[in-house]
Image 1: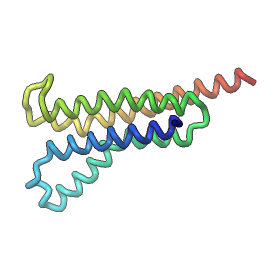
Image 2: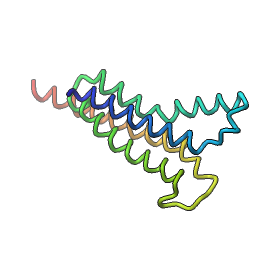
Image 3: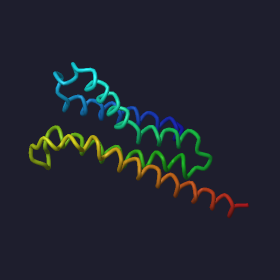
Image 4: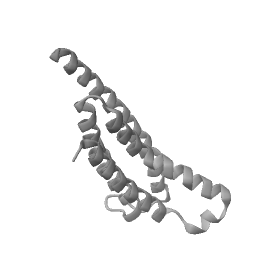
Length: 134
């Protein structure tokens, strides 16, 4: 199996779990208003954005460091992200607090930064290894 397919499959798995945890913490009576429903759709895209970045990197990556590195970074940010989302829902390591839901706003930003910086570093390493090989 290619690293691109593995990355896409794991991204779908992590994305489904993340969306389920997001919808589980959201109150259903709040979605009756159009503005709240629009916010929920935007928040869903925001939660899925780090996984999409890594799938695109694995798909268009020229070097093996990028294609396999995208899979490794996806595993790390997917596990950490979903654990934090599950903790906001089920309170494994935290106490119940209404502000726990802010993790769905803040954590995707951190995941996006980690994904972009990691892919930049892996691209530079791949370019350096390719030049060294010639």
